[in-house]
Image 1: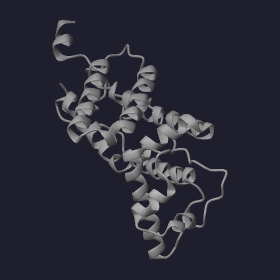
Image 2 (image 1 turned 90 degrees about the vertical axis):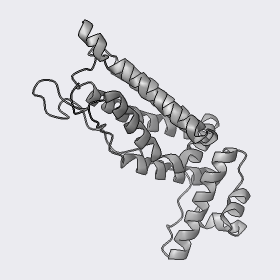
Image 3 (image 1 turned 135 degrees about the vertical axis):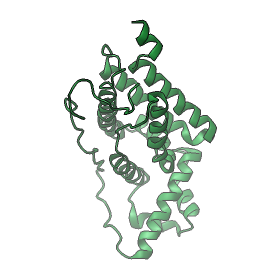
Amino acid sequence: MDADLLCRRGRRGLGQGVNPVSGPPVLKTREPWRNPPRQARSLARRKQLLQAGRLLFAEKGFEATSIADITAKAGTAAGAFYIYFRSKQQFLIALMNELLERLSGVVLRPEGGSDVRQGLHRFLAAVFRVDRDYFGAVRAWQEASLTHPRLGKMQDAIQDWTHARVLRVFQLLQTHSNARIDCDLHAFARMMDRHFWSLLARASRLSRKEFDREIGTAADVIYHYLFCDPQEKSRS
């Protein structure tokens, strides 16, 4: 098997034929945003509120978490929340914009040695490690987007973007010398993207061992769909 996970067939250069993906959608609210804080103390207080929200959303979900819960967890006065956010929904949107910005900075280009399967495991583990601080936000977002139509439309836009990113990874992987050429990449990318969102929404309630097992299973599914085993290739 080739030493480089993204070894190309023939003489095509890396990335040729694979469309780039634009930046993430910027989620907006009908409520105007508060002016961003400038002083270090205000910045720190806003950060405390966001961190408290992530933790509480992970534990209780969106509807069961109140603004009073968030301010108490952050150790701030009850009215401090409204200095920075106009509603709990706007607060959640701020968290999701932060997550999308973090995700946009993740380079989705798997690399590995001679073992493609293990390379996929390492790649997925590294990608999902970026999201760990936001598992609670994803749980709350998935819950809220089911009952708030406007958030549901935002979720559709987010999934269009993440689907395009997953598809691009699969397109890159399919250029490996052992890749299958008869895969429906669009349908598979859509299916795996939905699975990844479901996993992120459940992740805050999983142990680290359980979460790592799910990542490993996803990597195996991707490998078996996109690649021929060496034994299978030798028989063909």
